Image (cartoon, rainbow, N blue to C red; front, top):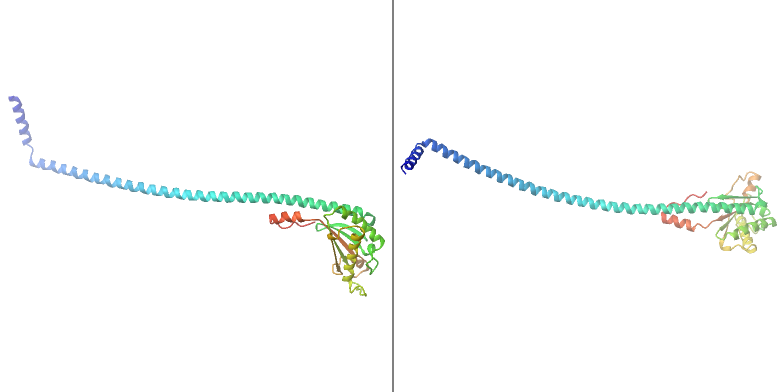
Length: 277
């Protein structure tokens, strides 16, 4: 017991030996540590506040970016839809153009086949100066000279002319979808009689005379026929020579295929009509 008391007294005496200066220094150091701790806590609080602010800005920017991405995706989806619709339109248009080209090719082949039939039917009258058969702007053009059909200044067909028209009528009746335009032409030598006021009158009446022969004697439907005259106004040769005037005195019969199907496809595609050969 005595020893314990002596030890306690020694410790108390040792503590009593700390000077006021050291004590004050220890207290100051403690206060500094407390202040440093408080400043550190404040710094930590500031950093945590900055971190929260950064997180808020990150979330805001992320949401903003996501909205922009959604908007861009919506625009892309719309553009993709529009592109798909345009592709469908182009595909349909390409198909129509293919159909149009096939129809044009068939039409050209049919016109050429018709030309061959007419040329074969009229081979007995194939003198180059009297008759020609050719494809002209998608039509078959049969050009008959005045010498084959009429006497000079007359409108009544001679027998050779009627025979030629009869051969032509067979082809026309076998091709009921072909429309027929008959156009009379003259040279520039003026004519003026009790019946004809001028060359124009003569060319028109010659055309109607041919139309009547085809309908009344050979049974071609008049609904298919158009008769017209151009007088001297569409010459194919000079009127200064006898040979040129002979070429100008002619009748042209145009055999025109039905183009309703062709023009129907053209209207659907909005394409310009193809040029006829």
